[in-house]
Length: 128
Image (cartoon, rainbow, N blue to C red; front, side, top):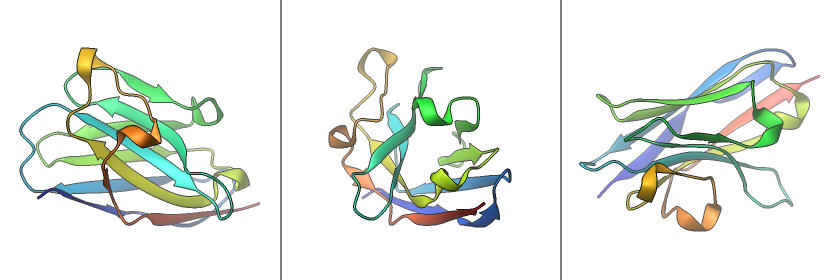
């Protein structure tokens, strides 16, 4: 059974950078969708970035475009979220997620209801 474990969260000042990691255990043989979400207390979980592991398609929500990059090391099955120029409003619990049956047509969007595997989350706090 595949499990996802996030790491790399922490506290950083505004303008700083962090890179989150999501390690997938278990055997994943087919291309699929990976995504990062974030959630602050009292708000819905928001899709931040997503990618199709079998191609070049990547999606970013507008508030992080140009600052965040999602990528994967396929050899190790680790998916990363590189975050630069962090802002206070990026403060949240960040979750990685997988849709092992997704990616039809090579597209993967960060729609929460389409993802069935979730990590436990890693906290990112940006101080202004």
